[in-house]
Image (cartoon, rainbow, N blue to C red; front, side, top):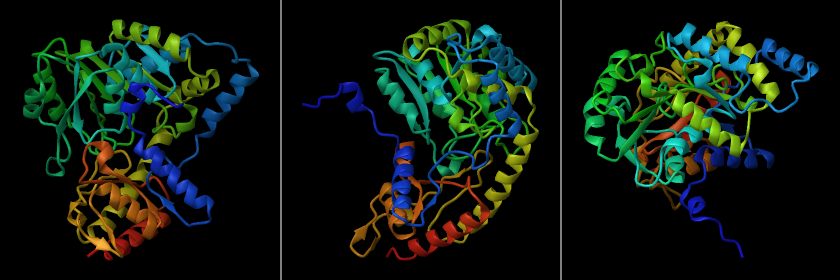
Length: 397
């Protein structure tokens, strides 16, 4: 008899990973699928980082590391925060984990319990709400539509806060929208939060360096709230190191200690070789990141022009990351060959079936009227994909 726990039944399967698997299954059958569902750079990890990993193996970094990470890596993270963000986090306030997703899970499980509410602006990254539910908390979703560039206003934040509010989590630059908060927008949110001293702010900044607007802005910069901001980051997106599985937090000391305690029972320290590679990445500057970001911006501009040519899509111009999140609700209720599209999940399956293009429906991101497209692939494939999508959508009547 199979009987999983209630907590597992309450969790959804990751929609992005599920769609990626479906596209891989079709590719294995010999079908030419263009995968725009996956959220990872298509670049290889820079050689100097791979060389550091090889050196670490030769130097026998093959034994258990400290639970929060090697001190040398935590010092590198601390210096990165100071150098790139002008933020003060001591090495004791840094915890290294198995990817930024693990870092987020650690923080939520460390601070959220039964009855606690956590504010989540929508669209949100797929795992936020399920991790809150796993911690037996309640996600309070704040709807932020395309007309406001998918960003929560100070007024919306104020209205969402209750006596049960324990924390808020958001990403900037955003997955799934690619939009980012300006310094002024973050200040307005910080000013609201300054009036509620018990609320923890989790700022997911994993897409920090894929920013087309110039300087990255962190909500942790504001004096009136900085002592309760947890900054989540990692090496996956900026350094093309998704498979290395290294994320980290800079946090108030009490949260860093709590996360270390939790991680000590779950996974212990992250992979030693990946840690040494990440240390080299953080100490090696951001020139390779700038090169990758320039390519992403060129792709963004290309896809923006192509999407504008597709009737029925409502789009905005993302300012970072590598996603578009068009409103596709104009296609709801339309059909082709007895196949009716009722929502964006249906539309994603329709595009996979008819256009052989993998995307992700917006329901998993809290915005069922939208569809996520990743442009982390070559220009030739992007042009082909947009043409396929345009042709397939024209079939819906």
